[in-house]
Length: 379
Image 1 (cartoon, rainbow, N blue to C red):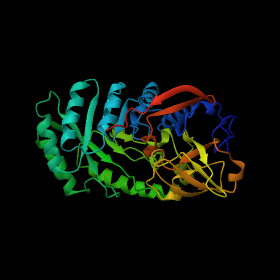
Image 2: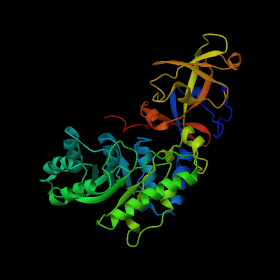
Image 3: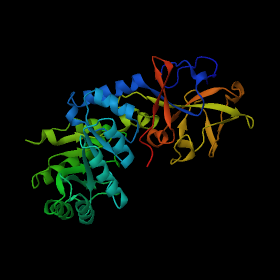
Image 4: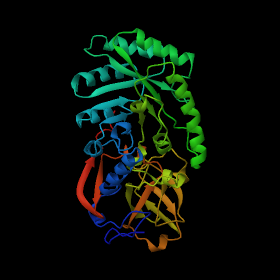
């Protein structure tokens, strides 16, 4: 537990942080030093070859973090929305893959981005011939064709095309139509969350065999693979002859990390760089506190008991959650007063960040007075 008027205790593996009394809650906190350390760790994983990294910006959605990546020599990014893609371009990112198949109005919006930011190379993903034709129709009158990567369903069964004839039909459609050109494969393995590194590696090896088989029949200029849980495994994969430059790893959560991944993947040593600051606003009953940490402040897609962790309240049980309130039962309630501040660690940081307009920045163990705008969250 921490008081808003005193220096808080160390929570989880964060350093003690001073200056919380200056922060209105609920607030998103980001430790800039830890972000920089996590980026350095990502680069170390790929042997400092920045060309092998295409980090996903969906976790942070902040141009300030894109700039930190660029300062570290990373110029290739992946986005989930048009707004994130625009944020990358406005920050000077040289290469942006929109990893969400555009339809309808979004195709026109992508074309507008291509026109507005000629210094950024844009590409997107497709998983069917009709989407290829729709994109080709819009980009046929552009000076340069739009690069398309084929989104492959390697086991998640959410989007993507299966290996084999269906994939080849999409590839042939790209080759046949003006306005677009074939750029390679997008192989996202978001279904792989096995805590065992051995088990995860075995699953990656099976996907790798399918990729290698496809590469024997196609001229794929790049292959964007994996997410955060499988990032170090893909980074260690040996390249096929003459294909080393094509392999790009696409971690996202690493830059902030979170308690969910930290508790699952002991093999990955990243630092939790983002947290939430919340305040006790009431004490509704014995052993209970109510916090200003509602649905609008922390991602609520998980079951109630899995949404957030309070490092200083290890026995806490989440009782109820609504728009502006979170009721928590804890044996330590008697030691807390209305107005006390607590640190909370969301299990899933990515959608939690999207709920906040800005992040309060911590440097050298102190609230720095800076804020980073979450400028890529709007649609």
